[in-house]
Amino acid sequence: MGDRSRAGGFYKDRVYSEEGLPELIGLMRGNDHLVLDIGCGGGANARLMKELGKIVHAITLSEAEAEVVSPHVKRVLIGDIETMAFNYADGFFDAIVLSHVLEHLIDPWKTLARLRKLLRLGGRIYVALPNITFYQERFKFLLGRFEYNDTGIMDRFHLRFFTYKTAQELVRLGGYQVLLAKTIGSFPLWPLRCLVGGPIWIDRLACLVFPNLFGRHVIIVGETVLESEVPTKTEQRQVGPSVKS
Image (cartoon, rainbow, N blue to C red):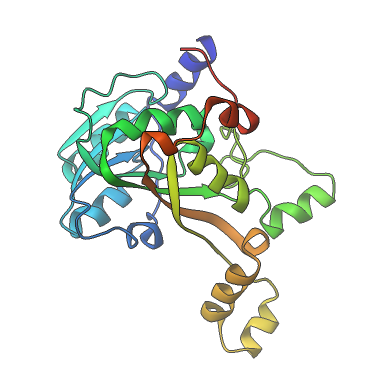
């Protein structure tokens, strides 16, 4: 509890400033009308969703972020999603967005399972996670460097690390069917990129053929499944830890 309280104190006045992730938000369905944006940051994704006509609710640990995001959402709650009471009816939301959130949690497996009841039947989650096996990180590890930074894949507040494969396992074990998994990243060697006609198509091809190597972000779309199809506790323990309530 002490560690959790210190984390909450750190986030209280912090605002994660980012440009949002249109590649993730662009995957949303037209009937994803009511959306919960968890870990809303400075509200960039909320703004994108509002522009698409979504009604957005948000959750953040940061009082400062809550103030910044308020103009773009219908309601914002301040709390820890691993322990807070959500105060929403079961099946209230059509979709939940978790953009670079799950890697900050003690038990993201259990949290995804908790969130499932907030989604209607056929509701979806839209997840973005950093890929720890991105080629730039591999090179650093090869040199013996495992160093935390203020931002990025090695953010000092990341508690969990995922690859293209284990990110999908996380979503599946949380009780969702993985409908789509892909990565967003870049191909190295700028001279070669110029010779082959620019970065966009070669980046996409590299991420398609070698998603675990060239993908910086792992993007996953998951859909709720019937209770009978949810992985058992034994299966969940084989991949993720169980934290007592």
